[in-house]
Structure formats: C-alpha cells, structure tokens
Image (cartoon, rainbow, N blue to C red):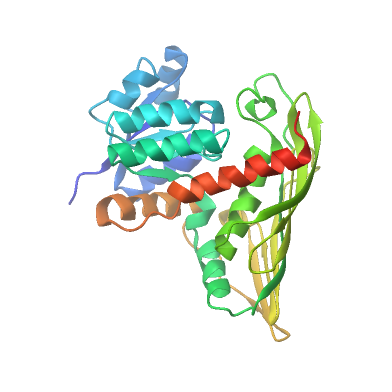
Length: 323
C-alpha cells in the first residue's frame, strides 16, 4: 500500500473539517498532519479538537514542513496569492479554496508560480468533481439538449453580519460574488466550456461589499445566461437551469448535492430524474486530488480556468460599479 498523501492546513478554518479533515480520514489515502493559524494557541486547540498530530508556529513554517505534501489553503481570499505562492516555492502541491484570488492579476501570479515550480495547484471547487456536475457536463457536451439558448444559476445563503464574519470584509476578499456567486459562474462556464462576455451587472453594496449581485452573460455559442447571489436571503437556495432546443436541465442544489438534490432532465417532453447519490462533493474533491497526484490525471480546476474565472469576476464587479 502506498504511503498516504500528507496534508497541512493553512488556517484553522471553519470549512476544513468538512472539506478536508473528515473526508481525508474516511478516504484513508490522505492524512492531515499539521495545522497553522494566526494565533498558535488557536492552532493547538484546533489540532486537539480534530485529532491533528502537529501544529506549526506560523504559516511560513507550515509550508516548509517535511511532513506535508499538499497544503490546503483555507485562508480568506486576501491570503490566497501570498501563501499559495509560498507553498509552491517550498515544493508543495496546493489545494486552494475558492475564490482562487482577489482578482485576475493575483490568479495569474499564482499559476505562473505553479508553472515555474512544476507543482500542482488546484482550485477547491468541490462541486465540480461530483457526479452531478460531471453528468450535467456530459449531457451538454454530447448535445443531448440541443443547442443551449438560455441558462440561469443562483446561489443565496443568509450570512449574518458579525465582527468576525470575513465574508462581510472587503479587505479580506469578501462579498456575495466572491463567496457565493463564484459557484453559479463557474458552473455555467464549466457546462458551456466557453468564456462569457459580461453584458450587465447590478449589485447592492454595503460598506464596499456586495451584499447581493446579479449579472447577465452572453456566451460565444449564442446562449444568454443570468447569475445571481445574495447574502441577504431568507433561506439557502442553489438552482441551475439550462434550456436547449430539445429540452431542459434543472439541478436543485448543484453546490452540495449530498445535502439534498434533485436533478431533472426533460427531453422531447419526457422528464427523467437523474441519479444524485454517491460520495460527497468534498470526498470527490480529494479523490480527484489523488487521481492527479498519484495517477497523473489532468486537473479539472486551476490553471487557465482559475484565471478566466477571476477575469469574469473582475468584469462583473466593473459592470456593477463596485466602489
């Protein structure tokens, strides 16, 4: 049996237990070996709570540790470029949380570092690796729906405005589009396999942060699309719809199908429920990470995809008039 791939956590984040720690423990091909936080005491408490063997004094020490093969960058977006590049230059592969960076310029610097060092850099769009998104992508690419004419995708989650909520901090890279809207945008870009032109965008800004944003996109194949996101919603909602010449595709909860999902494809007037069960999006993400590292499979995220994603986000903000 091969030795497990060793993961070090940048940040004692709220997402890491469900995104990395628990699926790694269940997978067996990975082990979380160390964690670093801004406050060393917090890192020690986090390690004890989650059964992590070691802590690093700071982020710089974490990325240099010899018992770490992959760095999971779960820091706020403001820390993605600096510490992802530091980890790559220390010889580590990196799984970087979405949004990849604060802008396309930072994203470009990150993939240049990956190319320069020859190290793997993946963006943690966990839903991209799940069977639901892969099935939807195959249906579209095979032309089962005919030429796509219209599409829409939305992700809304009520996020309380508290002093420690980083998604309400522009300095840390917060905002509805960065945290929530990045999913609808990436899903549509994935399904179309094309880069959209931003037709228009509107947003509600509060203290420099977009509390909600919507945008209209035009894809080179001729389809028009709408995306939306909000941190002011009354309840969570994630929905994706495509309308083609032959039929429609609808996914309710395309972001985290393991928490309840309905995937319906209607062709020539006949509706079919597609399967949604299986490993979680986070388990699928680690499985893909293993495929790329151990089997040499092509990476589904990162690289040019990550830069194009941030380029579209920059254009949406510009169209919405972000102050």
